[in-house]
Length: 533
Ligand code: NAP
Image 1 (tube, rainbow, N blue to C red):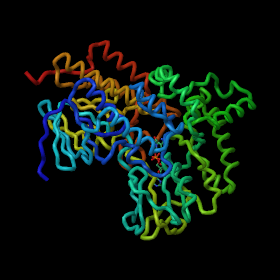
Image 2: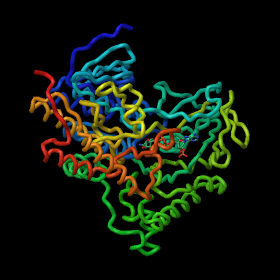
Image 3: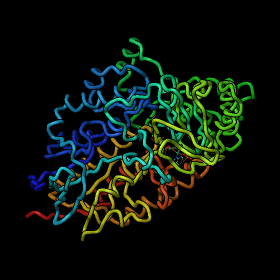
Image 4: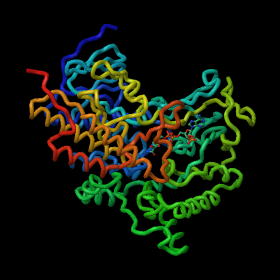
């Protein structure tokens, strides 16, 4: 197809997820001309692609939503404390239409190359178009490239194969079919209980068990809707300043400050509390004291053994890592599902997959036949999308080469050698309630663009020293993370990927501190220049 050359925008945003929509809004609000490119044919990012049955928030809906507009907050009534995917997708479409953003969006426009030259980014898309802008903001997320493990015979399977992160728009028909689900991370444990009822059989292939605790979701009552609106300003203040972007208050005691009876009663309250409360409001030393952590793990283990009737299955469901060492999923009826006669669990550590066959899956224990295989095997986390977009900065240097040993960034927003290129919500962004942290980054990027415009600059590039300082901080803080681990955030699931911590282990307080320092020092962390006369 003939490439159509577009006019020069101030800002080109990539990705119509939560972060990209906000970046487009902020750029337009500040009077920049802007266009947004989206690979999918709709709005939502994660909430567009991950439409598998059971996909829902595990951050409270109203804390995940945008907080920049009081009117928007007032007019959208979330139905549940933890909204399901379809509601979130509807919400994001509502935001886009309410703020008249859709006309700036181009769908079906997957970025295939982006090159910087003489102050201009030229971006090519899969639909044969080319776009040009001074500033390029890739809001492509950390979980947007689905990962299929290299399993022999995967292409031979004659049935249907789906990946949770690439779920089709038209419903998958599970009724009376034989289903395999591979992977028991947050996605796998969400889909399993939801489809179990309608399928003929469901076999869950688990490599690592996870510490799953109840999400405790429920509808938001009319009284709670009123209260949320009354509390909006206080809630916004808490969310905008909290370490991980949650409302939950930290506890004030260590696990052994309580007697055995008090501790069990407290854990019982945690078990019955919503979502991430079990992490953010649990005992202060839970994530740093092995003995405290073990108390909580023992409590969960007893719960699992109480729910799952077959103790051989329960044995397989007890993890061999500590709570918090992997990102803990929050579930609805997950363990209960294994009491159904049509559901069974395969422990891949005991009986690994040998290959996929034309009719099913063969492990070291034998073969089973399936109609559908669901790959809930995760993503090329952190750098997956950015390293595949063909981004070339100063002198034609490829971002994929620049980050061959892992990402180097300043604040998780820029990298040296790639002027006018920003990537909020990407590598070195924070774990926690992501829209809050990613929103902080978008606000900072927008402030930086405004600063440059006010001073007559049109080229912004981070100082390599600032980048080194931030990257060293991330690497050092990662060693302080709970038990020095959180393996999945190192990208260890991807064969051959360098082992580097891919989030900002220092969290939001470090980001806030460094942003304040940038502003106090007149943006010295960046090199600014003017290309236009
Ligand atoms: P994930 O956490 O990376 O889990 C992938 C699963 O696939 C793991 O159980 C993994 O086992 C397994 N796996 C990977 N390679 C395998 C192989 N070769 N053979 C067998 N099993 C294999 O991916 P995810 O569940 O999609 O979640 C990713 C992230 O998305 C989460 O951490 C979370 O941040 C986010 N998420 C959030 C929600 C929500 O509730 N809001 C829902 C879904 C996802 P190992 O553990 O042994 O590697």
